[in-house]
Length: 91
Image 1: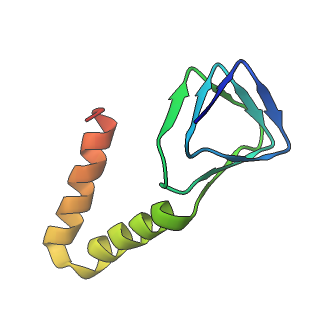
Image 2 (image 1 turned 120 degrees about the vertical axis):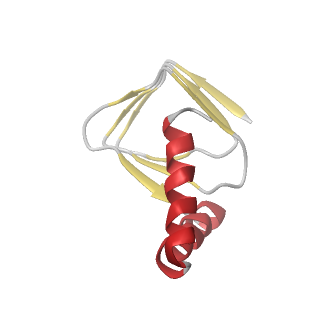
């Protein structure tokens, strides 16, 4: 696991998994999360043109949640809405 502190990332594709970022600045970057390892983000700055990408396990989780939301009726929609409510509350 790598730790980046106060580093500027510009014009890069940055793999987030298995890394810690503290006080870093991201400009014109694509941040890729695969869900294959831990990730810590602390007090970072996301400037112009930062894109987020989900790949691997993370992309499959989003696809699964989308399927539940659209294919499991009202109960599925409620489950996903409750999940996002918990995220907003920091749970």
